[in-house]
Image 1 (cartoon, helix red, strand yellow):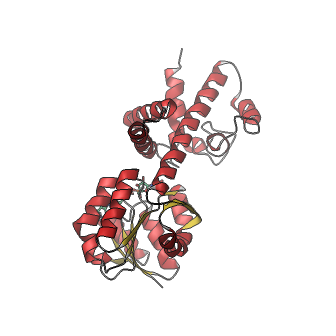
Image 2 (cartoon, protein in one colour):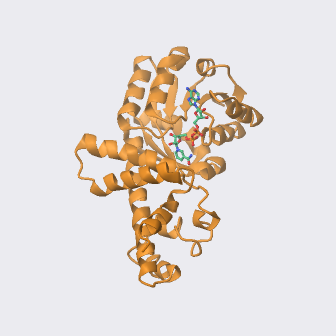
Image 3 (cartoon, helix red, strand yellow):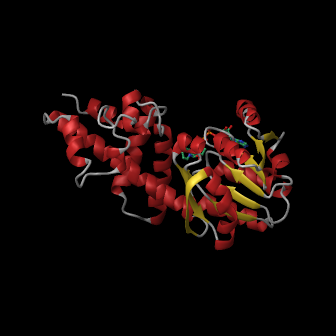
Length: 296
Ligand code: NAD
C-alpha cells in the first residue's frame, strides 16, 4: 500500500484518485474547489485542508492541474517543502515541455524525484482506469511509478527522459487535431459533390484515408453510432481542450523552428472554434463550423 497525495480532483483527477483508492492505496487529496473535494470524499479520498497538508507523509504526489504555471505554483507554494525527502512527484497534467522539465528540476533541487506522465483517454478512460500514460522519466523512477500508473491506465509508455511524455502528448494531439479537420473538410466537400456521408465512410474507413478521427470519432452522425456526432456533439474531448493542446503544439513548433504549417493552422482553427461556441462541444463539432463557412 502506498500513501498518495492527489492534487487537482477535477474531471480527470477525481476518477483517477478514486481508482487508486479502489486498488487499496491511501489517497489524501486536495482541490481548491470545494465540490471536487466533496466528490472525492465520497469516493474514499481522505480530504486535506491544503496541498502541503496532503503532501506531508506521502510517498508519491500526483498533480492533475490545468497549466504549467499551476503546476509550478503548487510545487513552489509548499508541496515540495512539505514532502519527505525522496518523494516521487508525478505530474499528469497536460502542460508544455519546458514547464514539465522545470517542475522536475524543482523537485530534484528539493531532494525529491520527478516525472511527467500526461494521459489520453478522457474522462471515460479516467473512470474506467483505461488511460494511456505517456511518461518522461529516468528508468528507476519509471519502474517505481509504473504499478500505480497501471491502476489508472490500460497502457503505460516510457517515452524517454524528462519532458518526453509531454512531447508525445503534444505531438499526438497535433496529429489528432489536423486529422479531424481533414476528415471534416472531406465530408463537407463530399456533401457538396453529392456524395453520401455513408458512402465516403465506407470507402475511406478501409482505404488510405483511414484514421481514428474517421473510424472512432466520426464527425457526422450515422456511420459510427458511438461517436459524439450522434449525441449533438456532447464531449468526448472538448473543443476547449483541443484548442489548449494545439496552443501547446503551436508554442513548441515556434520554439523549435519546426515547419508546422498544418499544426499552426489547426491551432488557429480550433482557437476560433472554442471562442465561437465550440469550447464545451466535442472537437468533432468543427465539421459544423466548416459546413457553415462553406454555405452557398
Ligand atoms: P479540471 O478543470 O476538471 O480539473 C482541474 C482541477 O484542478 C480543478 O478541480 C481545479 O479546482 C483544481 N485546481 C486548480 N488549481 C489548484 C490548486 N492550486 N490546488 C489544487 N487544485 C487546484 O480539468 P481536467 O479535465 O480534470 O483536466 C486536468 C488536466 O488533464 C488538464 O491538464 C487537461 O488538459 C488534461 N486532460 C484532460 C482530459 C479531459 O478529457 N478532461 C483528457 C486528457 C488530458
